[in-house]
Amino acid sequence: MSACEARSRLAQTEGLPRSEEGDPVFPEPWAAEAFAITVHLHERGLFSWGEWADSLSAEVHKPGRAADGSDYFDCWVEALTGLLVGKGIADAEAILGLQKSWQRAAEATPHGEPIALANDPLSS
Image (cartoon, rainbow, N blue to C red):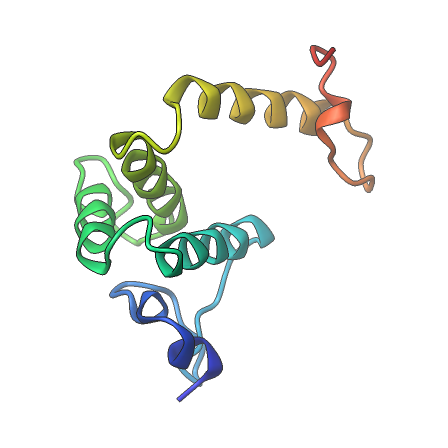
């Protein structure tokens, strides 16, 4: 059993991409961060395993999702966002504002430089 599987049942989420050894794999660093945030929030008791499974399943099975699963971690982030907003833990408009700010910051950051919110040309 890998360390990740021993630490949390979230690591056993159905559909989670895995290496040949059975460990979770992530296509980009942000996907690993989204996974870690979800594990942390679950372990802190903000939502149950069943709530998380229902939220992720609903996202993965929405019409228009990629048949090959290439949008799995987009579903993951949408599921987490929806769960936190639905429980009143996060504000949907604040999340959308941060997403837009990060996108502007990414577009304004020279190639090879770290992306920082301070690079958002609309930040004050």
